Length: 286
Image 1 (spheres, rainbow, N blue to C red):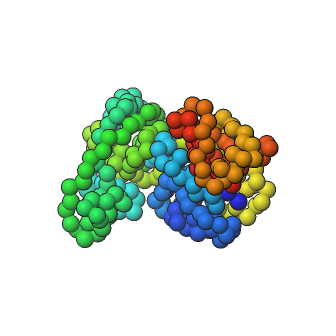
Image 2: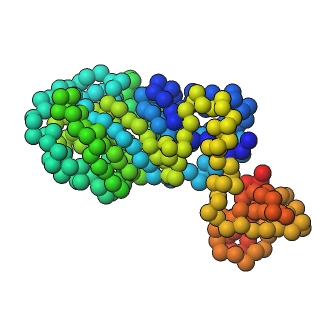
Image 3: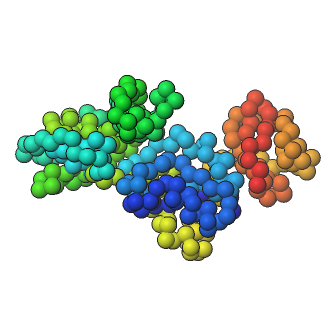
């Protein structure tokens, strides 16, 4: 079985837990793109078999999240798992809808983020959370990310919480975004809840919960084969001579625009190839 299953990860599962569960089901090589913290829920594209070769096509996907900010508290990790390290009063006007909307608009576009100290980014060969756990100070490199859209969903004045939807680029840390939004509002805050609802074209509407992967009917309905993944790409039909060359990794002269193509022999899907400078080279063989 070669392709992708979109999993709706539940709370308290790690991304690796998901991979191991699916590996036990299919007994194939399994990987994933887009780690989610244990407390977060939502979309994880899981790659199965030769589908793991698709990872390079997925690394730059944009993402969409629904997040909840708890105002008036700052946590060591930026989320619910951390210790409370600061408290602050939340004035009533901060939770007014017009005020919140006006501040959220300031985040649309290219902005600079400082990733959280509790993250897996490496600095000088060590992950940031390794420095954090040892209480060591380290200068965290800033990065530019892009917020394509951000919209308020709801406000709870009783709980001092703001829920919002954000469409953002790869590399965006929502924990940091929540803290920055709270600061823009004139207070402090942390990310209380997070749900990833989309990764690229993969939506939570077409995802399966872990409990559903034992249903062959649901897997068949939601499974994305390698051929289906590239359904928007043009196809190339090979004759028997060029098929042998393709399967053996021999480059084939072909007058086609530079792009990725679905490769067929006698109407049978055989893999994915890439044309560069009028030369077709093998990428994935089924």
